[in-house]
Every structure is written in structure tokens, then in C-alpha cells.
Length: 356
Ligand code: UDP
Image (cartoon, rainbow, N blue to C red; front, top):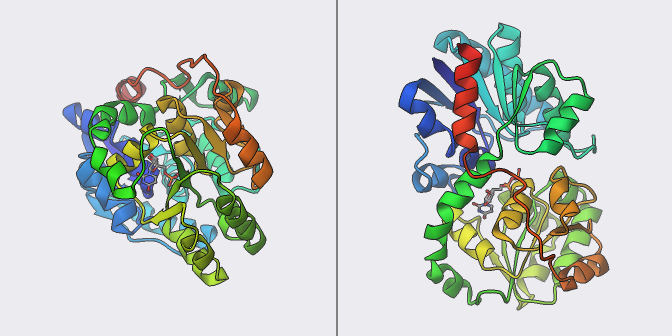
């Protein structure tokens, strides 16, 4: 079987780490990196750290609006698909690369397998939500992280075959945890001690592209009552610089800004944090798996189980709500919501089955 996998941004490199090597034990894989994230610190670092096979094809498509990016990806992927003649196209998550890979394959009559299918925030103003819905509806094999995702797809009367496989990011997080725990030097570098600080990330378009929302985000960050580490996504750094708000964050002594971190450094900080504040989808899930309370800087989430279980609180950009959430005691119960760390195996098995 020949699988063409399309990835393009940071979390997709991480997700591919759970699948690509395993897939290559028995099949051919052509890994295509669209270039959506082109900074080494958001892409290349993961190839080395997580031993992902280096992409066979690089399209170097980045910047521009979502529509223009997707359009350029479609144009580049169509001839590539024709050249490579895959039996199936594999896509992950909810980015422009996901939608472009899925649509080109579906139009060419090549089956599409979507990992992390069925996630819904029910907020159609998020570009990610549009990509999720559209990709699911053109996929043949829908591989879900959670029962909620399976139920969402049933409610939409999806045409493809739906399977609950668990979450591939959980595979990677579990595998990396022992190595990350050993990295005490990461905490020393930031001058923080286990259980005494918050790890913060923010980069969603809805939070950083609108100047008013960006200002509100800065207000939340300046109000944090404990030492905090914030690895700054390049998009966020750029927006803060343009808005003249970076200085206010740099001047806050309890807030340490850092460049985007490698996966193991980031995981070391996450595993030892007292709390995580984030607008990232993947980080909400990783915080849950690590048993670290999460405060989500969004009004909605697609990872609803973490909220229902009491480990995640949605505060949007309200400083008072964020402080209240940080003061809450985590629940005693911690059910296994996103699988047993063997999702990658099930993804490969599902692909085998599709093509039998
Ligand atoms: N991550 C990382 N370094 C960082 C910040 C995040 O390795 O400085 C990892 C994190 O562990 C998670 C993934 O990047 O696996 C989340 O990516 P991101 O927040 O960019 O995307 P989202 O999940 O919001 O789509």
C-alpha cells in the first residue's frame, strides 16, 4: 500500500510521529510537508526530536490568507498526487493542509483517511472548525480520538466509515514523558520549580489577530498571580510587536517569554506545571493527560470531555475568570478520555482494512 501523508504545521508533525514510522514497517509512505509552518522551531525540530522521517516532498507554501494558502496547496498537490499515485491520502487535524490534502484526494477519487476526525467546537468563526467539518465530509475513513467525536459524526450523518482509535498525540505524550521528566535542566533554565508555575501558550487567530482581543489577552497575562513561562508562537510575537504590546509583557518580572520550544522541553515544563493556560487544542489535551489543570483562553473547545471532567475551564479572555479558575482544586477523578496510547497502531490497522 502506498500512503501519501500531508502535514504542514507543528501539531501535525507531532501527530505523524505516532504513525509514520509504524506505517513504514509494512507500507510505502510519501510524507508531504506543505510548508504551512516553515520556521525550523515549529517544524524541523520535531523531525529530529521525535524521529519523524524527513518529508519526501516540501511545497514551501505559507503566509497569505487561509483561502489563498489553501488554493496554492490545492494547485501544488494535484500534480503531486498524480505523480505519486497513492492508494490512500492521510491527513491530520484541522489546518489548511488538512483540507487541501483531503479535497485534492477526494476529487481525484483517492480514498481519504482523516485522523482526529469529528472534533467540533461548534464555532464556525474559527478557520479550524471549517477545515474540520469540510474534511470530515470528504473523508472515507474517519479516525476519532474520543466517543464525543464519534457521536458528532453520527449527528451529521457522515458518509465515511467511523472508527474510535484514541488520540495519536496521547501516544506521543506517553512515550516522551519519561525522557521529558528527566530534563530537570529545562526547569532550571527558566528558574522555576515543580508545581509552582504556569505554562502559557496563545496563538489562535481569534485571540491575536484582532487588536482588541490581543489587548485583552495581554491583560490576562499581566494579571497572572504566579510565575509563568510563555513560549511565544511567531504569529503572536509579530502581532504583539505590531500592536506595541510586547514591551508590557517583557517588563512583567514574573512572566518569562521564550521562543517556541522543542517538544521535550515543552513537555518537561508541562508535566511539572501547577496549571496550563492556553488557546491551543493540543495543549488542552496534553495538560489533561499529564493531570495538570488547564485554563482555556477561548469561549469554546472541541475537547469538551476535559471540561466535563472538571480539569479544564473555559474563561475566554476574562482575567477574573482566569484567576478564579486557577484557584480551583482539581477533581479527584481522572478518567482515560483519549485512549490508551496505542492510537497509532489502530490508525495503521484501519488503513490496512480499508485497502483490503
Ligand atoms: N508545543 C511545543 N512547543 C511549544 C508549544 C507547543 O512543542 O513551544 C507542542 C505541544 O506540546 C503540542 C503542540 O505543540 O503537542 C500544540 O501545537 P499548537 O498549539 O501549535 O497547535 P494546536 O494544537 O492549537 O492546533
